[in-house]
Image (tube, rainbow, N blue to C red; front, side):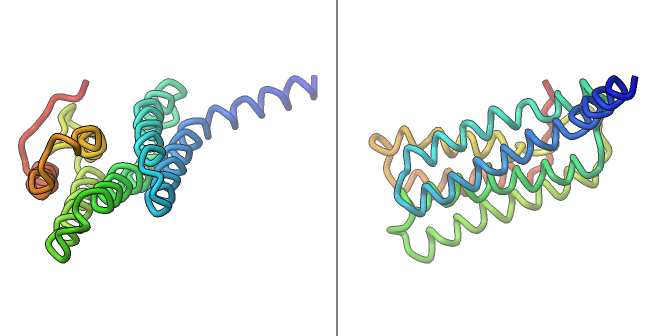
Length: 179
């Protein structure tokens, strides 16, 4: 009987931490992407961001499935998002494309990250309505990362505009229905 109780208790603990563990994995892949970028391993950096996006897709679903949604999980998810979809893609594309623009490239990179952080903070203090307000940072970061595959056909100047447009879309007030 004691053994069954212990197993049941362990399963409950695992369920209660599953979503946060997935979020921590998302965050870890974002961190790994940053390190890959710093080591000029750009293809790995892209791969790690896409893995983070896959994990980010499921942390909320797991939390809802196990009825484990929490304020801690919400905050942790936002911290993971700023790393994996804010800093990691911005640093990747800065190093790969915008570094030659000097201070202007740095400004656009920091603007993108700051707008992503503002968007996440705004999301965390708003009541859930079934709609996103502004472009979610996960979408912006994934789009920015996907643009890595277009660097051989797009002018670097396009990336200055892309950073700016994504930054503005994240802090704008248009609404998108959650899917």
